[in-house]
Length: 139
Image 1: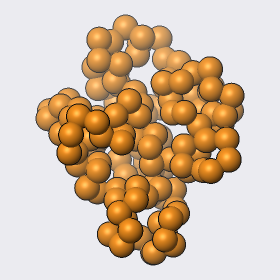
Image 2: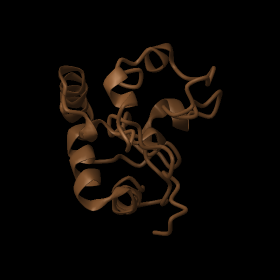
Image 3: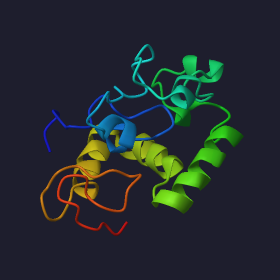
Image 4: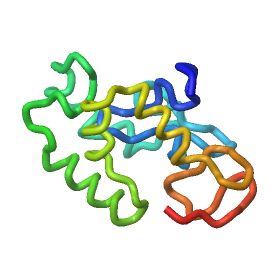
């Protein structure tokens, strides 16, 4: 992929790819992602996210949790467990990959991993079907 990845600027501090989130992908009043803190379309639980608003995170150079001395903290572990269990994605694994391989390589992998095999559009981590063509997705 090129540096103009569709997910560029959408990787949250916790390792979540906001470009995969149903709030970002919805047609009506889509969320702009975690870095748009003043977004009125952002779900309330995202605006009050303890990870995004973490004081330790504000002290990092990268703006990613992997740089924090508490990594992975209990908040991130809980979020990661929920996403691994319900959606087949690990934020901690994402962060470790970014730390070891760089953000661009992560973005390239995300383009491949989260594209519908039938229609090619990006798929949502929160659904088990493609939002565009309704093809069932196995994660």
